[in-house]
Length: 458
Ligand code: 4AD
Ligand code: MG
Image 1 (tube, rainbow, N blue to C red):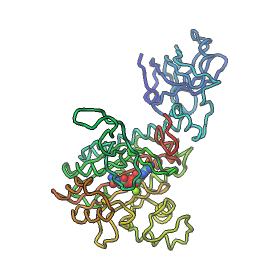
Image 2: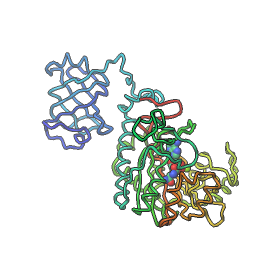
Image 3: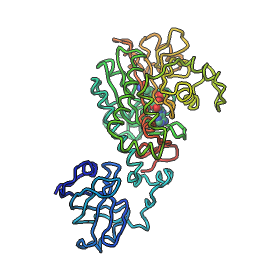
């Protein structure tokens, strides 16, 4: 007998074939002569309906133990279902219980629990419809990211998690340390493991630049860490970033790549993850289909920071944070620009140099840098990127101005001394993109185990 995943079983034409499924019980309904069991195995959103006749061997004893959350095996004949809303059902000849779930103590009894409650149940919440759907979409998008870059001949580089540099220069890093093992020629135990301060990376960009300036087109996709005290629905202390880096590319090339990447990912979702997307469109965010459509319908808008600030100033809208040339855009400004002014994704370019990191290329006006942020309706900033400063003297002067250690970054300056080239790249916040793709309002729901100030369960 074939053991099947429910996703495949639901897509088969029923012709009395013998099948077997294994999964977790969502609900049980008893009639006089049989019980209906709704089984979910995680392969898709839908459950398989199993009809278990009361005449089954041992069934009267087993059925008393079949409660929501238990794990079980059901085997029998796949038949066309007379009921509405499902094409097939399984007429069981055998039901076997693997593991019970005591109805008095199993926490997921209700059909809908609040996301706040589920957050305290990180070990059980993937068994709910919405969190299961998020997990499938996250996996689907990860594969799509790799396929996108692989089909364009980008080389995947695994940049380090532990690093001795602060890419963004914002000082928001988690220290990593351990006693240094005593060894011949090394200082005694107790000294720091790496012999210098080390931290968890905030971005793989600077190391990706090393490889871009050797291999041409590279990308890295991994976890990044920020010790920023931002307790918002858009910030995590541990999040994942997709970071391409390209030699011989300017700012416009990087923006074109970002636009293609986003459109590719949305098209991939619409083609492969309809069932899960429909759940989000129905129960989480009614505007989801429209927002996804906006990504595909027209080229993204492009606007300079200076123009964006002018539009915000004359919008007449009361913002919580004031806008003015030279200040960073806040989430409320970003959303106003993408939702109200542009009604689609918008690239804001050429930000004042003083609100951006040291590595961005200085424009001819000497006041702004060749940077871009991509803002999405409903989310705000989803990507940050730039052309990198490839001119040795300009970069060095900027680093001195910011009191960065020329010694620590000597290798980074070397890249500008030996075979320097124009190059550009960006970082896509993966969780924010999953929020955009599902409509989930809190970023803590789109990563399996969220880490935020004051909270790191598991
Ligand atoms: O704008 P950021 O800080 O850019 C960089 O780190 C560059 N070095 C990337 C590059 O050019 N290779 O971060 C990039 C994106 C943001 O646009 C946002 O989507 C996401 O990462 N991000 C966060 N997501 C969740 N929680 C946080 N604390 C985040 N901080 C940034
Ligand atoms: Mg940014």
